[in-house]
Length: 197
Picture 1: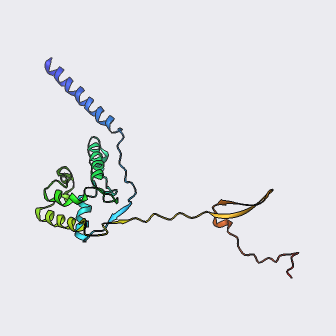
Picture 2 (picture 1 turned 60 degrees about the vertical axis):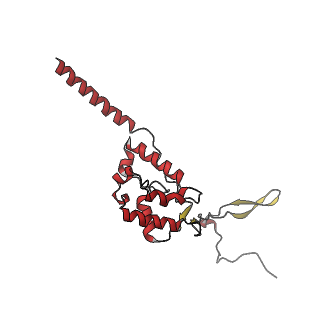
Picture 3 (picture 1 turned 90 degrees about the vertical axis):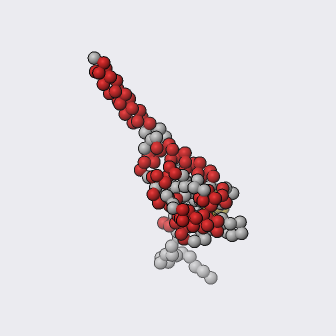
């Protein structure tokens, strides 16, 4: 009797866990990449490549969310790490953040996070790779080097054209966009009834 009751309890527990797992998938998780306002002027290609592989997912607005970033509760941890990482250092912004401390954190093994390297093998750096990467970060973010950041040029929006319109009170203008179909074209027809002296 006790064995049947114990087996039944295990089944109910498994059902409860399964229901809870499905339910938490509907919890909203922020996974956004805001527009980049600037980009880093990297001093060498190797440093940029390592930064993109080991840092950009948490320290830029170019996060590449893997499939497991959509499965709770792992998605909660990833979203929290990305938000915190961007607050401390964001390569997509021209901001006064912690990038001057990046080389030191890489040398001490604080960055990349060990939890990130477990899932992303490209971010798991050897001691030699750490030292080269740290040296590249120092060259890039040195106070003596300018510019560190290149602003992104915003796309230019088309300007509205003015078109004259007749009104009872006289001639007035209203601004609105002119579509290509409204662009005046030359006509081959002769103006009848008009004479020029």
